[in-house]
Amino acid sequence: MGKRHPRRDLLLRFLRGEAAPAESRAVVRHLLTGCPKCTAVTRPIWLLADGVLPAVESMAGRWTSVWVTQTADWATQTAD
Image (cartoon, rainbow, N blue to C red; front, side, top):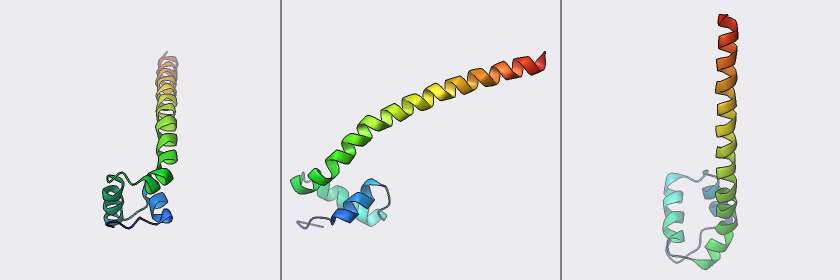
């Protein structure tokens, strides 16, 4: 990609994990240059993921805990 910027649709496909491996490598190399234009496109999505992912992981952990507890309770009740 050199000094050229990746197209906006490629940046978005990259962020969704839909870019081909060669495209992803090129985008990463470009973003590592600190390009302000491309960082402006990607930053809001990175920030969203940084805020949402921990919340989803936390909820998943809580639901797993509830499921394990409930399953153990059911197993105890059926064993009696």
